[in-house]
Length: 288
Image 1 (cartoon, one colour):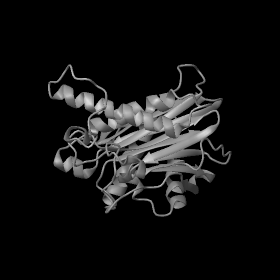
Image 2 (cartoon, rainbow, N blue to C red):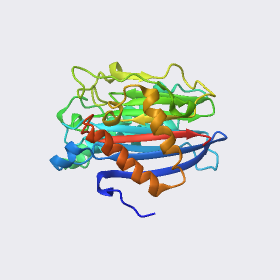
Image 3 (cartoon, rainbow, N blue to C red):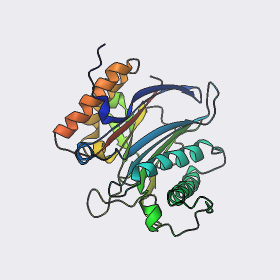
Image 4 (tube, rainbow, N blue to C red):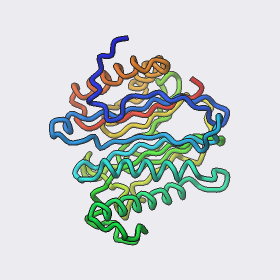
């Protein structure tokens, strides 16, 4: 198949990942698209996404997916999004899921995120021997430049757990996409682009998690994590995913077709003027 997609708009080219998690086949579709506003400004995409397995074994106990959306008014927000995915993903995937609450692991991961930001800022300032402990005031001018929101989904032996800070969205999807439920609240303040990010010392006020740790629902076909550049396009979730979900699923074995579809998908919502922001989607298919 001839590749016609404009790969320059993808900060993370569409990928299809196949896993075995707690005895269940899992397929993950992931991509990040640079929004029109950032293209016109010549700035980088502030979104980032990553997947972490709890082990390298053929059948892992847990899969953790993290999506972060850096706050565009902050100079180091792209790096902050990467740090958030790194810190939260590692902490959640390393969790002892039979004894630890994942909300506590998320908070610990957020502390690791602050350490990464602080250490990076000090190195950039030439302070190579500084302590890396995050004892500095979190609202310092250095750390807030890494401001980012975050979405996290952990899937394991007991089911799933979802959590978010900021204005992204996590959906549970069933019935071929025609039944979709928002799993965490979309938190905004003031107006649509104002959020309380992970760098804010009151981040807990924007934190939300799914109803209970690891609720197993056999009707679920998968999940979708989306930054606000896409989630703001959603009116009726059943209509939205009823169209998008089958299109993604039929491309799970065709990376070239997925890339072409992902570009058309992002351009469609951009041309409809729903959002000029960066657009990240992570779709998780259970037993595809």
